[in-house]
Length: 268
Image (tube, rainbow, N blue to C red; front, side, top):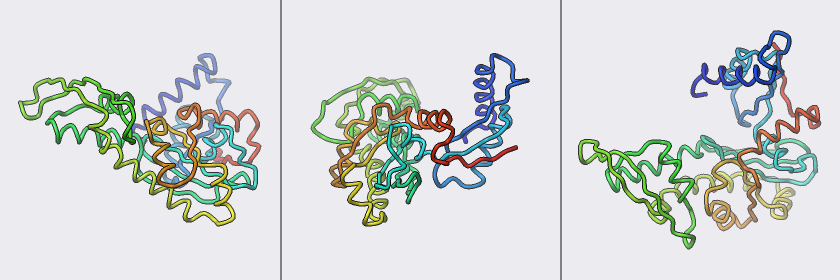
């Protein structure tokens, strides 16, 4: 968690807004999605933030299960299904069956790593320093990991490190940053391949049939699904609203009163 105070303040704001401005008589139950391999220390930090914001109880749900429910996967079925959630800091890949996680794998690669790779490339090639927001815009608007697509360009402003940090504008093309983005993408693909290799044989055929489901912001990066499919040989699908799948899944769990028993409760 990058900033404990800001996270607690943000949650308290939403709690108060939902309660009509007063939380004296209404203290919410908080359901928090966490990475599948989150440690007890990491969970404790989420618990403390939610408690400080005014929650009367806090429950945890594995983020991958929430994402699967949010995109409509029938996790209760005996068939094996694979979901990959590519978030801001971590990519998690998991095989699901019978309403739970059979196995999961993760790598510390996400949107932030792609942004850092773009910033480093521009610094090395042009001697230009750009901010995180600019790097993210380049990734979103012109980024791609597969050749042969549309060649896009974007003019960005930064600081010329070869000229005392003076402001400078440069035009960056898709083809220039493609190889840079393929580096982190390859790490994600290796995470997926490792997960599949560890999957019980009886579930592998199910995954070949149903495909790999992608969620998370980086799943919208041009060519990422096609590259994963090409490297793994498994059909790959990106959900319609990849940024919303985790939140939508938590909504399903709350509205249906945790039908799959995935909430790990931690009461005050």
